[in-house]
Image 1: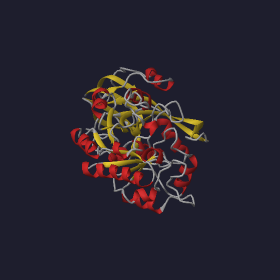
Image 2: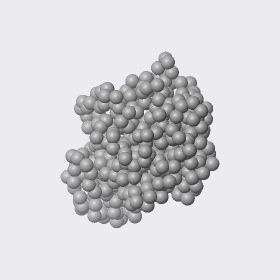
Image 3: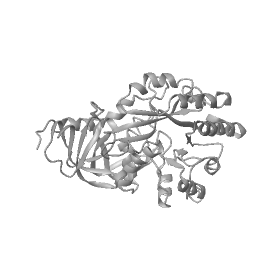
Image 4: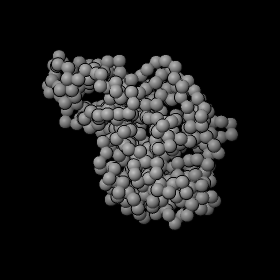
Length: 396
């Protein structure tokens, strides 16, 4: 059998199939062609020795900002793909209806990783985010948001609002903006991602307005608006909403992940739906760095490897309605793959507030395959590991 790429002998971790074990993975025509304990006789021009490495579905970052050149905090999505094993990125509201056409033409349609997008209910997205994009509620454009989602089916998959008081205003102004975002999500038949942080309403109050499939991001943020009650336990409304299908996303970022909040929530049985980075210009050089580093922090919190991989692959795939073709290594699915190194040792990790914890494991990306093609380049020593692997090894 002739394959385009073969990944030999890696430890496959694929929660979508409840699979963990040593397997060979073969790729042909951009799809997973075989997943086997022994491929047998084959031919391939690209053979990678993945022994002592993890082979997982391509990572899905459910919260990043990649409108490079269009908003002040936007990053180049291609660098995130190569350096972090990320093959699908959900841009979390960088653009609104007024500037989404440019975002799609110049970034999304040219990108190596697949980019899906949430449309910010503010017409201009995050162009003037530092000024508070919705303090004047006239900037909320429900009709334009709905029309943009309808015109970009399959790419624009939902609605975003940043529900901090300095952004949406206080009192009735804050609620008016919040409900505009809810209305846009309902009228477009999609879902809403709500950024929490020093908000004019509590998390339980927000959850009363939200439906299954909607999402709270920055779920481990500190400050005055958190998922914990005054006993440092998850609000009963949080646990009830999680049970009924509201999503809770990490969205680490430069100011939205606190060890103490995460530790207390996890201690009391709470688990986030998805691990995401909230990577942007203010977080990429620390404390976030990349998706594998963010995943490593949850290993340090005591979560198991399969659970962490699920929160970074199949769970976000389900959130965007794509579980049949991404976030999985099932035969016939899109050949999006991350090959990861899992190091053992002592590693220090920082939250968004400068507090540190030690972990005994560290994940890093060694190779990324996107749509059946090896992604070249990368940033730093981690990606250079891929260049040392045997390439074009004779078939056996």
